[in-house]
Amino acid sequence: MNSFVQKVARHPIALTVAASAIINITNWVLALRLFPHQAPAVILHYSVGNGVDFVGEGDWILRIPAIGSSILILNVLVAYGLRRASIRAVWILTAALPILEVALLAAFVLLLRVN
Image: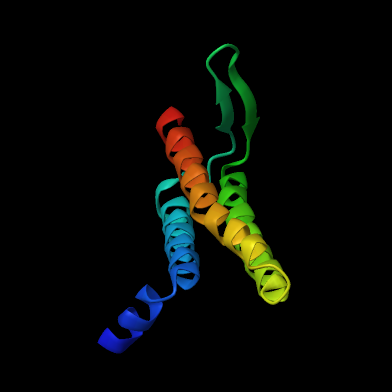
């Protein structure tokens, strides 16, 4: 196990993808465990100026981690396809992943607090 951690640490792109995957898995676990899925109506969008904007079914909250998973997979596939053509594009695609996953996790936590 130690050699695996050392190999990943030597490759920062792999490290950012792994960190993004861990954040996404955390988002899935929290969404599946903590959010009221069986509720017929939950707040899914709230803004300070308008208040509650969108109310939907409880299982719609799973769209947040699903979007994160989709973008994670898509960015990794595109980055892999571009690895020989442009290393800068690979860096941009993979560096955006943890930022996106943290933003989605924050959105989930805020929605959890509102409900």
